[in-house]
Image 1 (cartoon, one colour):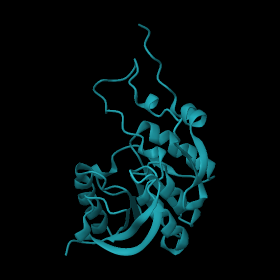
Image 2 (tube, rainbow, N blue to C red; image 1 turned 60 degrees about the horizontal axis):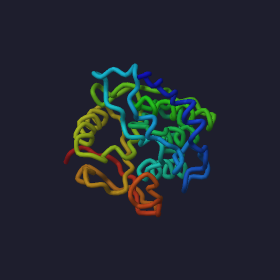
Image 3 (cartoon, helix red, strand yellow; image 1 turned 180 degrees about the vertical axis):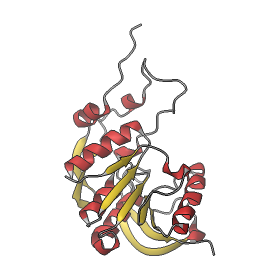
Image 4 (spheres, rainbow, N blue to C red; image 1 turned 135 degrees about the horizontal axis):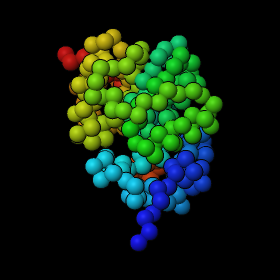
Length: 226
């Protein structure tokens, strides 16, 4: 049987996804999934895949999730939060939050994303917005924080194991004098005792189970353990 060739994610995204304004954020366009995108094809193994390598990740990057959307909305309306600062977009996915930070005047943005397909989407989305994002394709949570002034963490508490990795890293950020903002629609693994509410918006969680209907989502400051 002939081995299936690996799909080029850049070509796939350009051909099968739509560059469209983000719901609630018309200032930013992203390559977003639609019912005919056929994203499953990007997750199928190919003949050259390394069985010892990481499992393909779900295509979180193909949607504008509520936590990222609310963070992006918040900083676009309050550009002084990021103006002139070095920013880390943690778990960047589509790059929505990092793009918003650069549009709001951030000096530089590092987008941390480990999914191969997500990295391709991130580059395409940054190109579409005509912004320059520095991409980190390693797990930044495993080591010391990068040299930034602010961490923007949208939708990073969607699962227990992920949240358990995030909290120690965010604590190291605070210890280094780095501010941390979290965007989330109130998922189960949110560390509520460590968060101070800054603002709330109604935004669609278009990649979730809500059918794209607007729902309350919030921006928090991540604070030191009391």
